[in-house]
Image (cartoon, rainbow, N blue to C red; front, side, top):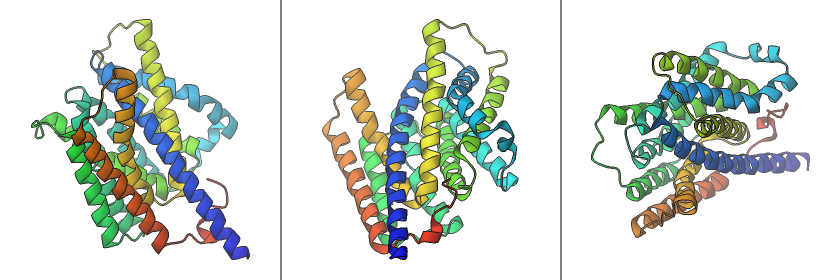
Length: 305
C-alpha cells in the first residue's frame, strides 16, 4: 500500500511537471514575440540589460525569502557554470537570430530542441528512449517543418546563431534536470546575472534612447522570461526531460493562438496539418512513456525541489 501511494504521488508530480512545462512554453511564446519586436529597434545588449532588470522584479522577493547566501551554496559548481553559460548563449543567440530572420525560421531551429534533449537525456541522464519514441520525436519535428515553412536563408550567420542557440537551450534544460536539487531561484538568478553581464558588454557603444513604452516593454520581457524559466526549471525537477521535451512543440500551437488573438492571423491548411502531426506525435510519446515506465518513490526529491 505504501509503495502504491508513493508511485501515485510520483505520477501526480509528473503530471504537475507537464502542466508547468505547458505554461512555461506559453510564456516563452510571448517572450519570443516581444523579443523580436524589441530587437528590431534596439541592440541585443540593451534588451538583455533591461530584460535582466525586469527579471529581478520577480526574482528579488524570492532571493530575499531564500536568503542571498543560498545563491552561493550550490552543488557541482562546474556544471552550474556550464548551465549558466548555455542558458546565456541561448537567449543571446536567439535575439541575435530574430533580429535578422523571421521568427518562424528561428523557431524551426529551436523546434529541433526535443531531438537534442532526447539524445542527451538518453546518454547523460539514463532516461532510456525506445525506437518508437525516437520515431515519434522525428515525426513531430517533420510536422514543425511542414507548419513553419522555413525560408531559403538557412545557411546565413543568423541561421548559425539559431542552430547553436537551440542546442544551447536543449543542453541547459538537460542540465536543469541533472541539477534538480538546486533551488529554482538559484538556477534562474545566476542565468539572469550572466545575461545582465553579457548585455552590459554588448551594449557598450550601442545604447539608444527609448520611450516609456519601450522601457516598459523591455522590463515586461524580463518578467515574462523569468516566470517562464521558473516554470520550466520546476517542471524538469518533477518529470523526466525526455517526456517533457516533445511539449516544446506546443510553442507552435501557442504561436498560432497568439497570432490570431493579437494580429488577426488565421493559420492556413499547411500550418494546421503540421500542428496536427506535432500533437499526435506528442500524445504518442506520452502514451509510450506511461506504458513502459513508472516512477519509484525514491525518485521523488525529498526536499520538494
